[in-house]
Length: 463
Ligand code: ARG
Image (cartoon, rainbow, N blue to C red; front, top):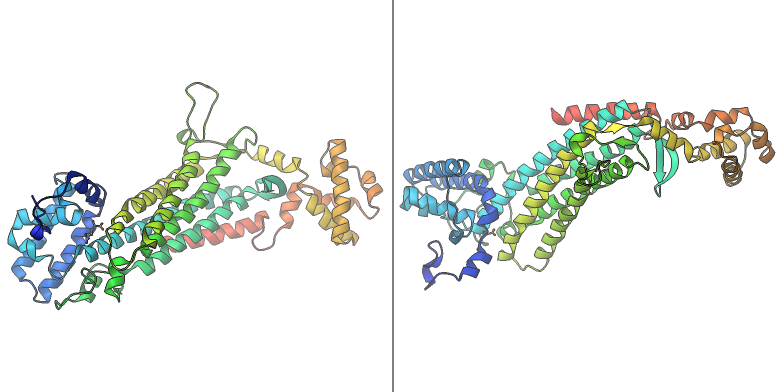
């Protein structure tokens, strides 16, 4: 049998394989609420413009409400032969209300319909993601507050570089996440225009009111070009870009959880609720949740690359290729949402081993820069010369198997006569971090000031 919606000129139905490759109902049924919302707005506008009768408008609205209830209750029968969510709903509407159902599609095409549905869906997802990011930020900020003076090694090249506070380290992720939330917010602004009324590609000759449907759907305005309206997917690309960047940030944090919870560092104790054991090695406690957050970044970045490749060769306006936009976006958004929730749970319950962190900070001569700076400031050496003398002092400490602040003053003076007792004021890790009070620095007081900044920021964002 040929398709009831578009089969007028067809002699027979599609090959089974054609039906399989063509159908999107398996994944676009997720858009049902948006599809119904769009249809309601469209039907109301058709009535108000005198394009369909009030009675037809009422029948359509009641039918759509029943369909929404059927889908919510799991009673709706989705059919692959009906291709997609739009035609599944329209066919059911026709079963329920008969002839008026056929008037709903006046001055509309599935092209502007799907573009509208998908924008509405992505818009909700962007809002949701922003809220989840704020929740994770709140967990990190309160951990940072608790650890504003917990000392750990700061790394470059994963080699101990200078001591930092763990609170400072955590707040670095808060800064990243705030920018991520901002990217979701920015993407929403550009997304928020309505394609509805563009019809297939050229607009319509019916006297529709695009402002009315745009407003009913919460869009700022109708899109200004009908060909762009049905064929633009940059809103999805932008959402995926923001998703991929945020996932990349989570992946870096996940990587640190994996590394620093291992016995080589022992900085973190993984919470039971977010780790697993091994079925063969009883001693194991594996950071699976962190590893999966790290790994999911792969599919999220893949979804961005995938849709870019789909779009790059498409002439205007709609091509069926665009049906492939949805699965990657759904999957990427789901994956990031799950990752944010997992990261929030992990970070909230993460045990912090301050003693191990401190011992590691002390072991790598991490105050060598402070020593060189002291030689410049207090002994008047040029920085290059100070760097050289400090290198010799590090070698000496290494030889004596002691820390820099355990070197006897007399031995230091043999290498540089200008060194005095005062040098010990900068050699401890406490004094090193405390000295970095500059805005954005790692000193406990600077960290506490930034914690307050973020607490206020979050209170504002969540109000
Ligand atoms: N299922 C289609 C999609 O997701 C809806 C639009 C179909 N339009 C068309 N001209 N065949 O893109």
